[in-house]
Length: 169
View (cartoon, rainbow, N blue to C red):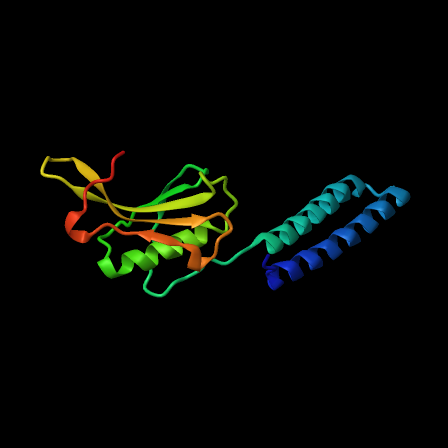
């Protein structure tokens, strides 16, 4: 669990402001100020905002970066341990393994119900065919990581570049 100090400090300061607004709200009800009902809204919103800052500060985890990896968007995630990413431009062969490791390491931070206790990350590239307007996905590689595993637990499955075939749908 990583605590972001800036968000945590902001949550504490906003929480102190929320307590101040609550004191003003109580004073407003005792003195029968016309603004007392608006103070209820302001103080409750401020307290909820501070709790949100604190929760985000406690749950925030930075993305891991691996040298040689390329940032690739995730195009499919079934939420049960299968993630598919597809580069928008051709990916160099030397960048496939580090990119798969980076994707798997960043997916392992999420809590998922993986199939057989694993998270599977597939890296696909869409390439055109001879037919006009038709393309097909090509599997560049696959990484498997046990749930709760570390970077060294990642198993890479990279097909031979000479025998790449489209992955079955």
